[in-house]
Each structure stands twice: as structure tokens, then as C-alpha cells.
Image 1 (cartoon, rainbow, N blue to C red):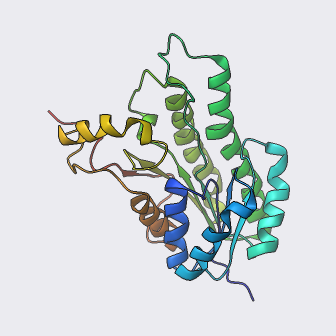
Image 2 (image 1 turned 60 degrees about the vertical axis):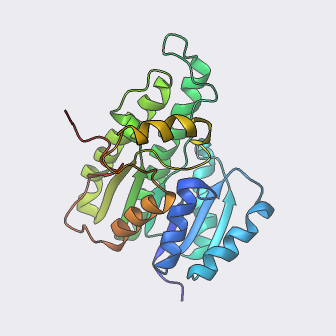
Length: 254
């Protein structure tokens, strides 16, 4: 019989998503994750998750922005690892080109909203309907960003998408609490991933100059540890809350 510690992590093939999958595997979760790469390119990742302790591991090539694929994705995930008890909305994109808000294009805006906000919102809706119908206690975690409140005028569409994720978290938490479903947002700061690669030198300098009290890059494993804590139920009498994983960067300081 398959364990009920079964989680779906979107965008789990690299960066923060990979860190989350690895943390869950170490705690004995069966893990399914999505991404855009062909399935054959992720075979080694599945072997690695099983070696870490995941009873089952599965990968599905899927774009969270494709709302019409959500139902079939959930069907495939449950067929592979069993009924879900956790959803981690991690998949996200940054602007292809950073532009001043005076120059932001509708195409870039729509792309970020579709992947970072619209897709996760409706995937949550699809999963939550299943949890409610099955009377399954579950946990949903949205991976947001300090950009929900920290302004970057060169990527305004990203900030807006993550501000929307913050509100979506509270909406789902309020609606689903009575169903035994907890919803949280994990809000990363400056994390060392391929997404932040192009600005590595900039943030090396800013961290050295005191950008955050904990003067180092965050790692995907830092986010993975936070998500694992929430899925374990360590904050059982809590929902709708934001967990800042930013080295203290957003502390108001003089």
C-alpha cells in the first residue's frame, strides 16, 4: 500500500524546486515533480530522490500555465505515487529581459502572470477540490518571493505576480481551513539558483555590504527545510502565514 505522504512539487527539476524535492525525499515522502524538460533528461533526478529515501518518485513534463492540463496531471501523479496529501506550487519564471516599468511589455506581463499566479491558483483549485471530496487532510505551500513587498522597478511584472501569490495564499487558507487543509507561503530572499546566476556579482557585492543581516546567499536546501517543516505539521495551529527565508533581509533597519 502506498504511503499517504505523497507530494506534488511544480518546477521541481532544478533550483529551489529541486531543493524542496530532496528535503521531502529525506523525510520519506513520495515525490512527483513537474518541469518543461523531456522526461528522459530527468531520469537521474528520480534515481537520486529514491536514493535519498523517497518510496516513489515520478516526473511529468508539464507547464503549470496550461490550465487544461491540470486535471490530467493530477490523475497521472496519483496513479504514479498515490493520493496526494501535499501540493507545493513552486514553478515560476522571471522576465526574459529586465526592463524599467516604463518599458514593461504586455507580453512579458502576461507570461509572468500566467505562470507565477494564474497557473498555481487554478492548480490549487483543482487539487483542493480533490482533497475536499476525499476528505483528505492536506497541506498546500506556495513559494512566493520577497518581491511581493520589495520593489524592483526593473521587473515590475514579477513583483506583481508574487504579490498576487501572497493574497492567493490567504484566500485559500481562509476557505480551506474548515476542510482540514492548511495553506502557507514560503517567501525566499536571495537564493543561489540558475535564475539568479545573471545577477550573481551584483548580489555578492550587496550581501558583502550588508543587504541582509545573515550575509550569505540562501540555498535551495534552506527553502526545502522550511517546506518540509510545514508538511510535517510542525505549525499545525497555523494557516495563511508567510515564512520569510531571507536571512533577515526584510527586517526594517536604520
